[in-house]
Length: 435
Length: 98
Image (cartoon, one colour):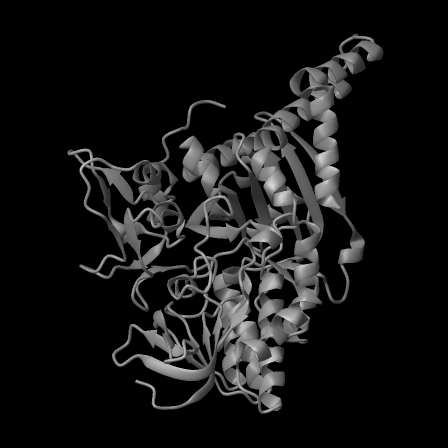
């Protein structure tokens, strides 16, 4: 199929793959990028939020050209029980800055644009091509890939695996383990279309201002999970995700959960009259630092979701993906510029550089939080939200009960549900994991 | 909350665009007489409800509506209950928004 010789093959055209391909091409590296979708983005699913700082490091002028939805001026956290939510909102006019910090985007559209920049930089992109296998030489080094096209074996000095959370190649080649049910979440999402003015009125926005709602609580019915609502220009991205192990254990359905989230009295009015135009699902790496696999080897590196680089606490993934792609490209560029081969020893530079970046530092900070959330999901996602909702209602409802009695009742409800040792233990465990 | 409501997943999938690779399903269920707990879990966990119980009490998969999330792979590939690959290049779900 392809007679040409390439320096590097990038598998996948998501955030990590595009960042890697573009950054390599700019260093004069000859890159072939393979994508199984009809066009880049047609298989990619995310909320989605774009983090400008990391994007700027790859395409500084992206704001002028990229299909962006809204810049975020407000973040809402909702702790939900069945009929209420306790919220914390942060809104600031500071976010109406010249170079806003975060944007909502629609991945299929954004990725198409991102890919156009990748190709402009000289990358050869081949779509509708599924890579089926990694090719090894007699010394077990990775020397290329096999695709589902006829005569589809292609060789290169290095293969960048940007194949996503569910990457088959690395697993099949024994480079990393398959994700396990307790370190990936399944999220389902719908795109709800509404007139622009309606979205702005419902979310209290003007112009291109945007808002994000992250929601947790009884909506996940005791499972480790979260819901989200993102305001785009003319649609709302709404979804919910929980650990696959929890779905497996409870037998609850993802679409049932999504439906209940949509019908929650705090959510329903936001969606009234909307037209749904797409239903999607995606796995999200949730295992954090402890689930990061081997990141490099003889003739290969792995980047983005395929390397489990996702910060579940801050709901950040695409920025970790694009940064890991960029750093891998820089490391490969350095090795190449020294005229050295793409051995594991040389490619270990990628890990060294990644360790020094926010990507690994952030994941390390929260290394104990995913296990804590996963093993105490009943408390953190069911019991506490219910208790806090009752406490708030007790606080605001005026019914002639003396305030001292109200406070005592609230305190008692907490102690009854979790006991003093339980409360103390939860607080300590959480604080320790957070630090 | 009430018992899980009946949601019509097929209506949701109707919004999506697909290019079905007729006769070449990318997911296959291993022949069995009675389904393993992993296969039974897929009846509920698959977000596109691709897995169904047939009249003989066996789990069957129809991949036409698959949204390629990989949940079934994570649950049932380790036990050998299913075989999972990506669809051939260009086939499968085509997200307009993603």
